[in-house]
Image 1 (cartoon, rainbow, N blue to C red):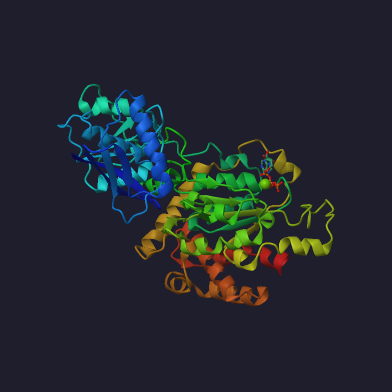
Image 2: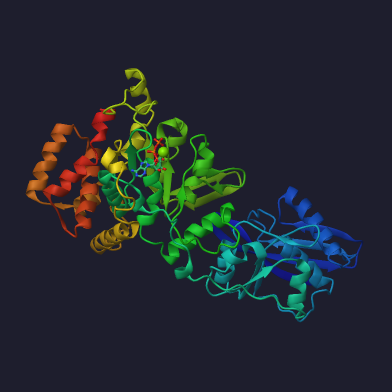
Length: 510
Ligand SMILES: Nc1ncnc2c1ncn2[C@@H]1O[C@H](COP(=O)(O)OP(=O)(O)OP(=O)(O)O)[C@@H](O)[C@H]1O
Ligand SMILES: [Mg+2]
């Protein structure tokens, strides 16, 4: 007898349908699985057999062969236990012959007691099942919420194989999971810009960065609010669209970093990896290539605190993902691509003791050490920071300000959304989503600048000794500043402000 059950595999953030064909014949009892890597087969066999017996069924005394197709695709993970066992149960007659399996897809790892354990990437697998025309997806109960984010397919949470068989046989039903509603998802972290006192210039810089998607570097002595500010950036970015939410959730689903019961991530991710992390955990990799921090920050913010403390090979590894907005990891068993469109925010002290250039406290570092510390932030990385801003110590008046006198994140976000919309109308469908992505050709196309602004830019170019890259950066930021004002033409005061957002280059790295 032959049976066919559908499961799903993972390839990067894309799922694909796997067919588990099970053949049972009355020969000497044996149990073979083909189509899985060696080690995984052995383990799957043990789990499937034991889970079957511990659920109260006799494992069939037949020659069983299970083939996982397509054979030429590498299948990773343990989510195939469930379809394999179902195929066997069908052949053994436990699953009634009239139960239709054609439009149902199953994923889950079995525990020895017959329970169904969580898998990575349930959302991606469910999307693949829907795209293949399936009508029902059976997910481990712990992953059911995320799978339910996929429209157009019914998701059932499965806790044990026994419960699943009863459901399929029509003995006791499992209730499907309700799909999430975007508007109900928590979309902010509760951190508000109005908590930040003073630092008006830096707040303005954050607003411009958010409006144009510009990477930003914050420099200042300890305790001036750099980390505070960075944590509040996602709250002034436009809300996630449904498509972005799905994409971001898929990555977290594959990485296994979705909290249980969470269906869709409603807020933009904020990732803040420590400087002791490896290049692999930053960009992704491993034997089963998993997404790194850059991808976990997809559609959100990657915050590198204490930037000079990151080893050079780690920050160097950032350059390609920043440029391409995706990472491709090559392994012996194939290549996997993960998207990584994120905003980079860096924060640092100007020297090791933190007080270089401080108006009242004395810096205890030697001049050489200050230089060495600063130069640990490499030129190429600095080049990718469109905005650099200094955050000085607060004055007494600022510290003693009434709490929450400043503007709220909601007000700032309103303007950010307006500016992005203004830019989108100009650039339409030109393959760029924000001004930070404008290359030199597109800068020429989209950055119309009036005569007095051009004059100012020329004198800044000469006076500051700008490079061609420096020129581009100022143009991009000036474009965003004009967008915030709803101005199609870049004027003198836009350029002046953009130049101000880039003045630290000379002070620290000059
Ligand atoms: N501008 C500010 N407004 C309100 N509170 C502030 C401000 N700056 C600092 N603080 C207070 O000081 C604490 C430390 O701030 P934060 O961690 O942001 O400093 P930092 O600039 O990142 O310092 P470090 O260089 O040591 O990392 C905050 O939790 C907050 O309570
Ligand atoms: Mg800090």
